[in-house]
Image 1 (spheres, rainbow, N blue to C red):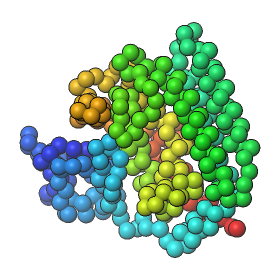
Image 2 (image 1 turned 90 degrees about the horizontal axis):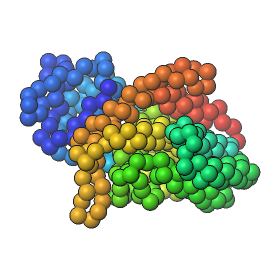
Image 3 (image 1 turned 120 degrees about the vertical axis):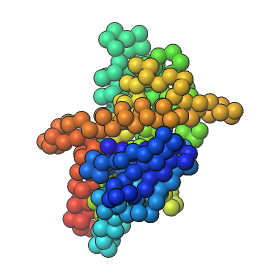
Length: 327
């Protein structure tokens, strides 16, 4: 369960040993045993007592921007990285093992994209030939990524980014054709979004960023030490690496919502500059849909767990991989 504080004047306080939301309509007690994350956006208030109570109960607190992307977080000091894993993480970053690791993530991302296209496209679709051509290109880029060899990631990172980016453009071209009229789009737009699809997708990715970053921190990893994105100064670059493995889950939720026309004109606004922004109703629909999807139990690597738990398990297994790494 996630608590979203995104209304001006809303406050979260501690009262009688419980977390209590105060808003214009009164008070609401939040169950500590069910609450996993608190998202705080501009205009909401959080007392220090409430923050400490959340930390004691291992409830994440994220401060997010207008597109749902974390800008800061509070967490327990017991999640802090130890010096051993940080040293190992740096050693791993500059190794051939890191090259193979990021290649596997990018290949998995392309496999995920192909799987999604097959799963959501209708039978006897009018654009089936275009889709098959795009899937052929995706497989070609996957083959190129697999074949590229290097001892360090910096030598091949531009090539990997180029192939991954072109594969994603082909993928989103087909996604656009799958959208009902009114939701179709020309391509990916991030800051700002220039259509409904990208507006919803960007917010969904913001939710995923928070989940992945939290999993990495809990596993003892430093989210600011990445592999392919390591040159992005003062940004959680490891999150940018790992998130590629899980983007499919957000893509699927957003595609299904829009194919069902679940996001209407009350869910977003269009600013004077033509940018699209998700509003309170749209955020509630998307966040609930993402949470429901992430709570579903699936089988992955022989384990039946929720998707949310699988992200944490992956972070833990990656941390163990780092600790066992030898140059």
